[in-house]
Amino acid sequence: MKRRIHDRVVHSDRPSHHRRRMGGRLLTLAALATITVLVLSACGPEVSKPYSTTSPASPTADDIQSLYKLVFWLALVVFVGVQFAIVYTALRFRRTKHSATRPPQVHGNKRLEIMWTIIPAVVLLAILIPTITTLYEHDAAAEEGDLVVDVYGKQWWWEVQYREDQTQDGQNLGVVSANEIHLPVGKEAIINLHTNNVIHSFWVPRLSGKMDLIPGHVNKLSITPTESGEYFGECAEFCGTQHAWMRFKIIVEPQDQFYTWINAERTGNPAILSADDPVPAGFERAPQALGVCLSCHTVTGVGQPGRNGIEAEANYGPNLTNLSCRDTIAAGMLVNNRENLETWIDDPGAVKPGNHMATVITPGYIREQLGDEEFNALIDYLMGLEPAGGCDAAASGATPAASPASSPAALPEGTPAPGT
Ligand code: CUA
Image (cartoon, rainbow, N blue to C red; front, side, top):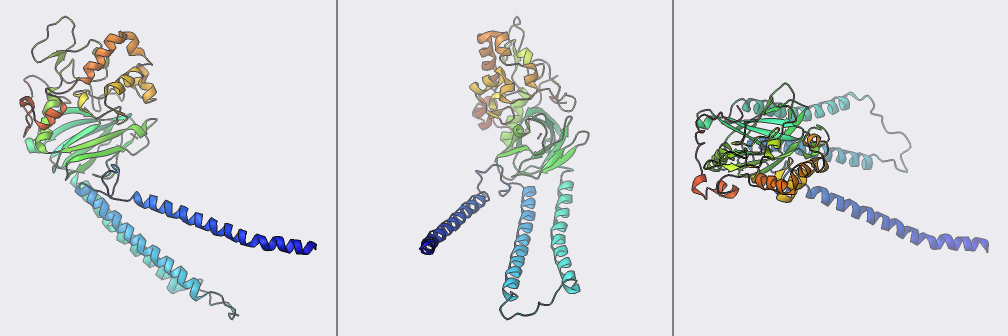
């Protein structure tokens, strides 16, 4: 009796156990399929993925893409070959009921040893030779170009200085900006990478490979963007607390738009700080509170040109000329609008902990010092830092004052080129 019950239990348990195992397998398969789809969907060439390396937009990025494809196809051939050999060997030489003796042992087989040393060596050489050639070609290309741009890695933002322009007889463009790098389409820009603090890495996946910024050494990168558009970049070397928020953007535009932008930056935002002096034509009165900002920041046309580049300590802030035309503030962290600017200036440490501005501006400090009215006036002024006719009008040349330029305008008499 006891035994029959036991039998029945075991018997009835079998199908459900089997069903559970089947269900488990199906679940695993479904999970694997989902993961595969998700992983593969990340490989698409759509431009909506701004940090994708699979949609190159410069010859340099094209070269890198070709190397990637070479490695991919070689790896695929090796993978398929090895899998085939494993499956074939397992089936062909599996132990059967009739195999009484051990199969012949191949340990120390000279022919096999030579074969599986030479094949990987050939594969590695096939990758090494084009890789080294490409590296040297890119290095050589970075020696000379149409436009020199000095980029300084700061903690945690990028200073950008526009230098010699060979298409304009080597004239120094003399513009200093931050985080948003404008480049003319089809022209070769030589990006000189500097830092006076820690090591950073400059990376715009769609335009170029990574290049480190090393204190005491200038690295060069050649970028010739072939299509207008916006290309997103980031710092690719851990450089402190806010490394993840050290983003930037390269804005590639037709040459006339580029020079219109350069001219707007050169003109800056003429304003006087003194409360008593009369305001000359073409100038505006800046709120006196701006004076505090100007101890670290520069606004071209207001006060003295600030220190920048390698001479500036790491904590001197971004150049704010035409700030209103930038898409983001705090190096890609916040969308540039009134509300965010207010939040940022009110308590920079809460927005981006560890940043240098937060060591000077404690929570609510500026608002407390100025009172609500003056604080709002300061924000209004900063939000109004834009070229005559506005940012969009200047870019499209919609106003006569900002008609698209084919070359940079002469600097006003007596003004030193910014950034020299
Ligand atoms: Cu700069 Cu990471």
